[in-house]
Length: 577
Image (cartoon, rainbow, N blue to C red; front, top):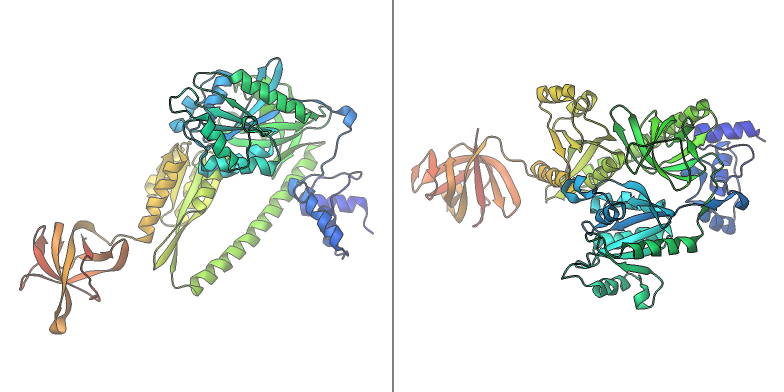
């Protein structure tokens, strides 16, 4: 009953999906459109089963209607190879050796913390490589790398074997449905044991050719650059089996691999072209933002300007109006008005979803607060990073942190998570919530931001290694969970015996271990790692005489306000304002 124009408008403004009048919609999108117009459709079990096959590629998920190209228009394209594996197993060193560069030296701690793409030539044929981080915090990045690839190189150190992120990488490759080539690295070391590695891989159902399986493997040394040709030959062999093709003569579709803000250029997105050819001047939409290609920069040297980029070519795109999210689909549009309208519709839809999610989380938080005996506490942070993917990875790791004891639960609330330097507006946001810490990951703060932070006493912490940031936040969470009493720490006493003194109550017979104890000082009583109470010293005796102060090494009797439940072994810490 509805006109095609009305359906197209609904798709764009209400669902954030770009479609033309002649394109076919997948079942999930059709259901959303029908329900959006207030209609009811019937379904049977067979149809429901078919719908499950469309979830991943549904236009509702990717933001546009996918179309199959005419097989006659398809042409061979370079394979896209993602290097994955455990942290410090030599993934970036391998790419360095293949490219004859030194990327690792530029990474903090020699550990990859970004996702990057490069293209090399082997035996006259091009290969596109994507390097992913191995640290546990970068799970999303590894999944993103696997989802845009044709082949996964699983790097395993011959002296270390299969580790947790190795197993995670295997899962990512299988979920993406792409073949693996195992690169057993560090074979030049005396402690190298390639057979052990291949044996351990069998427990994950990865059978190499040496063990009678179908998975290709190569024993290499990235440091010594040995046997790399064998690895590249096996990659090309796997690519030939895959018969990789794409249509270069159409509007381009690409995937945003990474996005960041660069001075003089604005937002720059490292992207991988999947279909078509991307050209300077093309108008595009990517997730919740849009733009016009002002420049295409080669990822190999970061300087060379390109006029166009075809299928499987990694390129840095300049010309975004905003910062896209890593993993967003970039699609070339016919005109800027359509691109702007679609991006604004997606922004509105995202805000509505965020609002609904916030309401749900608020209700859950209220339910937990009133339904449980434990007090809920939050540590607020604001995350700024050099690239969007790093901000996402750090934010995800922080949100998973949780500390608790018998009295309280502490979690992390991320107020802002985005790419770019720390600005005045970030400090303004942080100032609203007392105790907020600004985490600057591989970025600086503007002078105006530093001045405001200094005036408002807001800490800005700078990090270049992700787990240093996580450890610092965990330490601060411990302070939130077990705050120290007011005042400066002066000393502590160990409870040796408990005495009941008539109407006075229980007194802790103690020995001062360090520093001094002062009568009237603030104290907290510790039993192991548990805080029993925070109170004040009511009475302090040296033998039978009242004392104002007890020094280290002396015995004393300690009476506290509102607490008598002492046990031998308790520690009483004293703080004086």
